[in-house]
Image 1 (cartoon, rainbow, N blue to C red):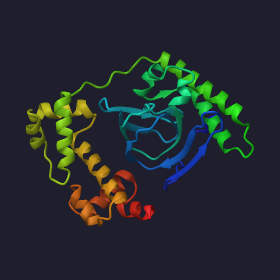
Image 2: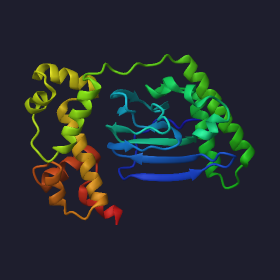
Image 3: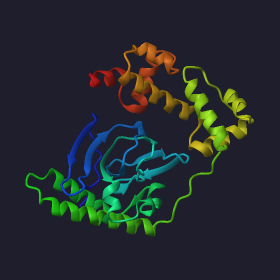
Image 4: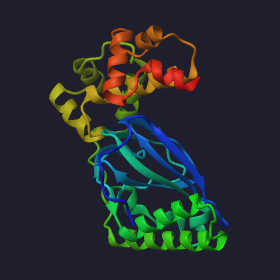
Length: 285
């Protein structure tokens, strides 16, 4: 059974990883995290994420426009499809159990291309799926696990339960595209290339060939957020990459990613990600 909702989510990030037994081992991760914004990396797994503590608002996309979901404890985030690059933003501290279900494990039982389609578009709640995930987690942690037969049976039951849930849930169409694909690709690249500049709605609207009012409407439809929030997210992402993958100083990173100065970047990281740039770099080393 799921633990009761409690607000005592640790203030510091905590991550615990386990691996199941069986023919197709599953990677399971229990984590407590502050609000964060991250790329959703490409893998050969379906990724399930069960909320255990903390109701969050998640903004996400899997290459087909931004969407939003409210995810209370006991519910699942939209399932990340395999071989898909996405992005994810979560606005509150939370405890989640993440389970990576290999595409090969699903293919043994069902047609991968048609299996969980509707569950990629919105959050969902399913007590049986949640119970199976918690059973797999408990088994992976057990000092004397039941063995591969249990893991294989639980995994097969999980795939079957997800297929049943997907068949019950109508597909959620993506939000209306605000720009033509060609214009959006150009605009997204323009923003990415000018993150170190003082971007304005007027300049981006002109670049898109639109009046400002129409531009703001189209941007909201395309991304689910304002240009300001989208650009801020991109600046945080780029700064995070430079913090962990370069030797640039904090002041240099701040200027390279469009923050007024190091103090501005530090305050923004603390407010939106719950950690300062210095703390992120110290944790890396």
